[in-house]
Amino acid sequence: MTTHASLAQLLAESSIVLDATATDVDDAVRQAGAALVATGAVEPDYVDAMLERERTVSTYVGEGVAVPHGTLAAKGAVKRNALVLLRLADGLDWNGNDVRIVIGLAAVGRGHIGLLSRLAGILLDPDRAAALRTATDTAEVYRALSADAPTP
Image (cartoon, rainbow, N blue to C red; front, side, top):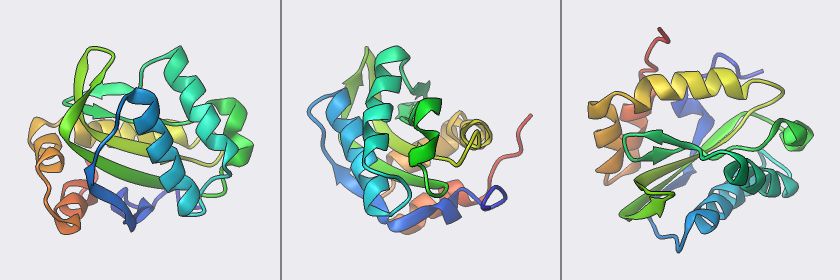
């Protein structure tokens, strides 16, 4: 499996949208889910599980970033580990937080815990989160994600 792949390796270039817009949180989650479906990483019903997770607990993680992902009940809909990234230049009110980056996440089995931990190491670093928020091309996104921060 891809448990040791770098985060950048889990993010196809076609899964990076630097000029995304969303009308609300559900729209942003649906777009991230649709991108995961488009990469072949998940079945379409995974998107419903992402929306359910968001209704249960916000996936906002700080530094202007949200990481929507499905519930454990949907783990059978995941074919492989993958990430997608939407940059919302105008931001979005995410339950009272200004979100500029939405990273959709899919992981086989319980692999989401490890991926979330690795992502948190990067996203909670203000400089790296800022690099993602201001990225103007995919190379900048890959640079911000490629050097996975060690988990504490």
